[in-house]
Length: 340
Length: 259
Image (cartoon, rainbow over all chains, first blue to last red; front, side, top):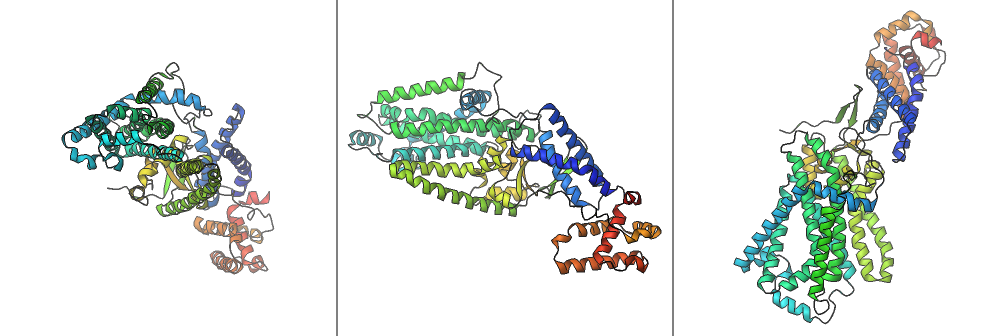
């Protein structure tokens, strides 16, 4: 036998126990900060356990100690060699007004691509409904959009009772969760090299364009703007940002012109994707409230002009947030691993 | 061509030490998911029962809260559990699985969120078909979410420190009275045979009485045949004690034994 197992175990066991105690503390208290002396000692214990593993590997007849040491070294390795930034606790306002818009701007080209694809879809849907009105059931498979827009507007404006009475909260919650799910889906479809995201954005554009042209041709532009702008000024950009996330993911998978490995590309974009999707969720919560409590009420209850102004103000504020917010502090945390 | 499946992920540290992480197989992961699904349903039932109280104030409010709670629990269960329990959910805990970074590094929040959000694609078109197929084709049994988030699922056993008290008895060893036979025993016993004897002693408490007696009897007769010690060296000692003496001879050099 190459080594004296008893002596080896007797000498080294206290170090392993100490290392395990530190690891347990680190696992139980993720925010525990070691001082320099503790760090040095932790590193020393890790290196000693690694050396012990190196010795015991040659000692083929003692698998139990080897497995134990392997598990110990594996756990310590993750803590010692983790070089990615362990950011401070999340500050919600700072995250929303700095990190989120900064992340959005960092990938602005993906956003413009998402806008372009959606606009292409809008153009297709609009032209299709303009030249072939019979395609309505295919382009807009929603029962409430099948009728004549003018008739719907007349019906809505003459309504004597509140159609959402006693259901506004539930309707609002349903909108928020459904739209968030669609957004997650749009981002997740980036895993298909971005193809799925592009198709989803295009399809959304087709519906949007078809609805818009249908109402414009029916002379209901004011109703359309008053109906869509209050919630659409947040909801549509939110879906576009989710699409931006999907395109970023697709881009990382394809890796055009980048010399880094696939793993590193994905590691680099992961925090940004999470930032974007959480930002989208916040926008959609607001959009859900507005759609349920404002968008569904028309003249004479709320003048269209007020709704249009409200929507335009929202759009301006969102543009300011995404375009300017956090611009003065370029050093702010670029990742969302502060979300803890 | 699909890469061949591996059961362990070997990680080489900068210190030149390699350690292995045993990968979880798709079937175990599927079972863990079933348990997690049951947990989510259970949580939804409990939360719904509480939210009925909100319905007493307003039916609309109760309905809204139920919709949001259902959504948050579905999406958030995996994220919250894996983040707070360092890569484990209830199902993974029960089946001894853990999500880890592919390089053995600490799991980041973004990785936990991404792998859970990507479930929406992995679960397409139904019953995790996409995720299951990708997992089966992938050498490291990663589903789509794992590939994107750079994570793997490993079998995680919290190993106790090896119980070597069985070796450190410090009792009188009759075999040591015959140094030349002791040396011959060391020479003739192969490392796997020595390891087997050591493991038998370390795991003796896991065996029931009859199995333990049979095992040690069989092993003792094997070692007795390898080197024949005089009868007085073996008289009055059980088969298990004989193996203990053999292991003592094999794993403790003479100098160490005299200390």
